[in-house]
Image (cartoon, rainbow, N blue to C red):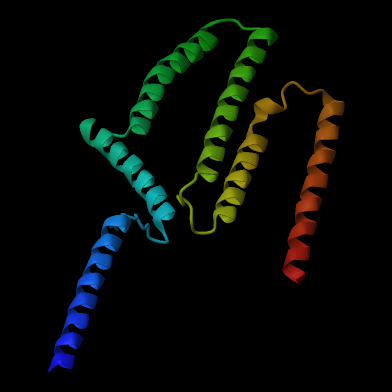
Length: 193
């Protein structure tokens, strides 16, 4: 029994010593737990941000249209342009019709016609090079169609030829023949391949 008591005393002593060491270890380390929050973005986050910005722009555009009673700014601008230019063109035509005019005035009218043609060509180019898929289906075909239309309209205007003398008209004819032959050759080579 005595051995048992001695053994129990040793065990109790070791337990007590172990508790003291454990308490000392805990007081020295003072372990702290820190919760760290990490934001994890989805793989397509940047694309989603870009799409969101585009959608916000479209929403703003539609809100503006809705505010204007279903009319976009482009519609308003086009209407204003028509309202201001048509009366001016009527005045110019009346003045030209009722006045004796000379070569200088004819040249001024021709310059105005050229200016209007350039404006038309710029609008055509805006339409053909529009972004965001307004002409998704074969945009190159659309561009070629508009180019053909612009060239045809240009060539059909007699006022472009009024200022040329006979020699210049012959040069112009030769240039048109070369252009015609070049286009014909291009089409033939594309059809044979």
